[in-house]
Length: 112
Length: 118
Image 1 (cartoon, rainbow over the protein chains, first blue to last red):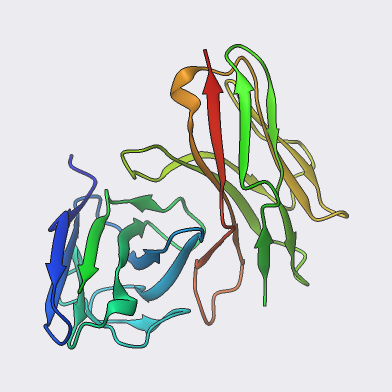
Image 2: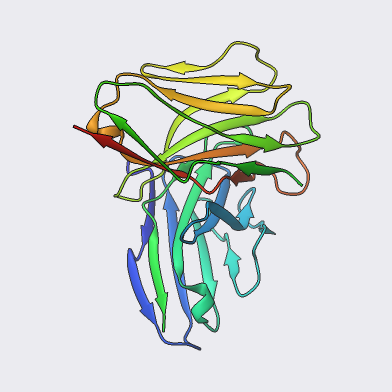
């Protein structure tokens, strides 16, 4: 039981490049979330999903897209990376809205 | 919109002593959930303790306990018998009970960095 895993752990991009972050969970959770964490700030919600095939915007969705084609996977895409997207990205999942969120180990992304 | 405030950017405690981390929040809702998460240098977010607003009894988990003051909108974390492994960033988080909008969205404070001195 791996819990929540994220790929990759580190990535460096040049401005304008695109990439996809993969989150996978093996707990059969319905809900999945993408957060970003910036220095001196708590985590902020980018997008979330309440089930396979659904996505919704969180607090800071601009510049990101997501997809939930399979229940166990939640992808976060950056179409044209900007330096302002340099951050640590966390994926989380939960069984339902009122249950504990389990977090992945994070991906450190640097955009130069 | 709900907000979570952690007024102590950094705290320090001597090993085996007790420390209390502060958290206040702003909400107009009567039912909600509160959490404390620990983030060690490994970056992994670990749930420490949770509190349902409708429960008057303060939650406890081994050496960790909370002081939940609903009227004052305060949710402090007490760590007893502090250990070196408790050194980490601690985040207070709020979650609305509402199904609509940001379902299950956690709203985090900015965190408190706890150092433990041997």
